[in-house]
Image (cartoon, rainbow, N blue to C red; front, side, top):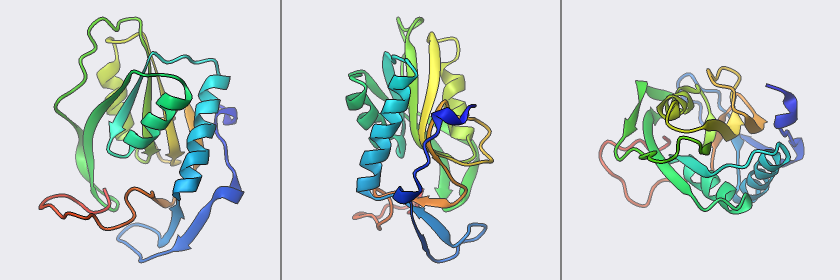
Length: 188
C-alpha cells in the first residue's frame, strides 16, 4: 500500500494519558467530533481523488456506522448498508474470531457492483477481513476505508486517514452508556 492513500496531520492529533488497561498503553489517541468531521472529509477526498466510484458503502457496525454515513454524503452514494460483526468484548479483549451477526446483507443483482467497506479502525484487521471475505464472489470490486489503521492489522485498507498503534477513544464511545445492558462491553 502506498503512503499516498494515508493522511497524517499531527496538528489534528489529540493524545492524553488515561488509566492503564491490561495489555494496552495508558496513552490514548483521542478523536473529537471536530476531528471526525475533518477526517471523514479527508478520507472521502482520498477515495474521490483515486477515481473510485462506489455503488454502495457497507458500514461495519457499530464503529463504522458514522464514517459510512459521512462517506455516503461526501461521495454522493445513497446506497449505504450495515453489516454487524461482533469481535471486541472490551478494551483489547476480543472473541477468538469475528462473528457476522444477522441480518447479513443480500447482494442480489450486485455482481458488478463496486463496494466501499467503511470502518472506524483496522486494529487486528480480522473484522475487516471477514467482511471482505463475505463480499468475495458476490460483488464486482471491494475496497476498504478506515479512519485509523494499526501496524499489526492483517488487512491493509485501501484508504486510511491515520496510522496509530495507540488505543483510540472515539467521540461516540468515550462516555459511559446512558443504558447499561448485561453482556454489552463498555468500550467495544
